[in-house]
Image (cartoon, rainbow, N blue to C red; front, side, top):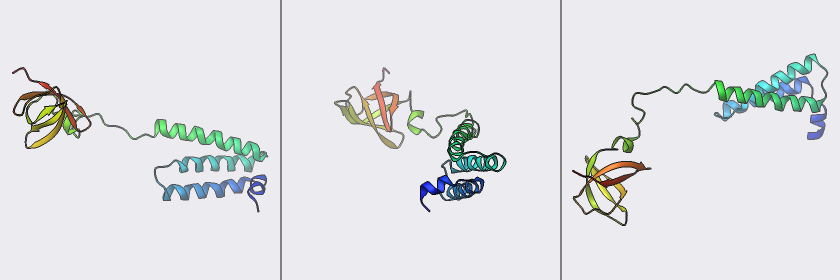
Length: 151
């Protein structure tokens, strides 16, 4: 049986078989939306049992219902993102913004190292000699952006 013959003979039960295959794929490949395509296949199969729909319209209906189910799943089934009192809790570098630290390795040509507590961080900023005091103004990934501290 060729693929075109398979589609030509699509009936309600074929959609249920497709749904089972999609549900099985969802369990093997988590994080993908196969389950919502499976739901769409079940709906098309149910429609196929009650209505006489040409295979072309079954495919179009499947595509439309798949888009709708994926849209609603992404929009309304997204995990709740809990608001936190400390949104930068796991962004360690961001927590240092505003802190005055010591230059560990002279900042030359905009790059050097600063000591924050017992850790040495890469730093970017205007040139500063070793031992100078700089203020952390931001981050660029894991690199601290610094400027000369006034005090």
